[in-house]
Length: 109
Length: 115
Image (cartoon, rainbow over the protein chains, first blue to last red):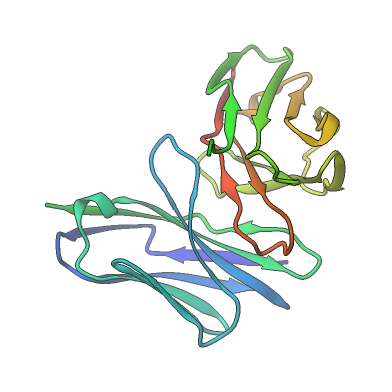
């Protein structure tokens, strides 16, 4: 069965303190790995899709990378407005989307 | 362009009652998904519509849940009768078409509380 785990469960950073969030997955035939951001009381907001090991994508202070077993979301010089829950999800051939539990990020001014 | 909308935003019902959740996808999006998040756990897939047809309903927990998408526009998810374990946040998402890995756009969710 496909599984997605995320670590840490929660992370507190000072503004400007760079860090990385981890998403580990066990899935056969990965078709895509997705990163979403979710703010309290809102639905997930799409950030990135990664399709194959070695792929990287960037958006502002965020950079997502993918290996055969895990993905990292690197946050460079975060700001308080980057505070949110970051969700990872995978899509497998013949399956449907499997989400991880998320990492709650707090960036303190 | 309007995003995915869901109604109501909150619903509180008694065990045994019926509740109907509604999702309006982004106009022109053929693909519509229902997900739910219960008890702070991860978001789980419920089902997938392509236009008015159920493409995959493997995530529906039991026959107390009925989803419809008449005319291929908005969708409803009915829970009848509701049980305590149905409490959670129900999300709807829509996708334009093409590949399953194309971007899904999520609505704000409906928070359902069953007492």
